[in-house]
Amino acid sequence: MRYCHRESFSLIREELQQCRFMVKIKALTDIVPDFTVSTVQVSHNQV
Image 1 (cartoon, rainbow, N blue to C red):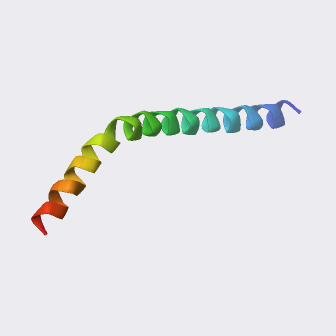
Image 2: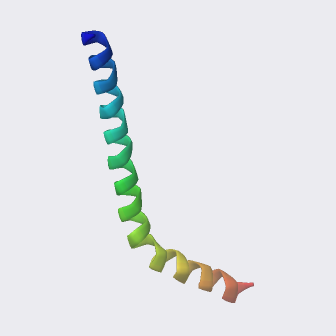
């Protein structure tokens, strides 16, 4: 029983880390779009 609980706890912790990772990525992608849009426009102008 205790082992099972510990197992699920580590699983939850893993999910939390993944969630935190996703939040970081989302924060990055919230900042990045303006940058990517400007670079895409620049590369389009070059072509």
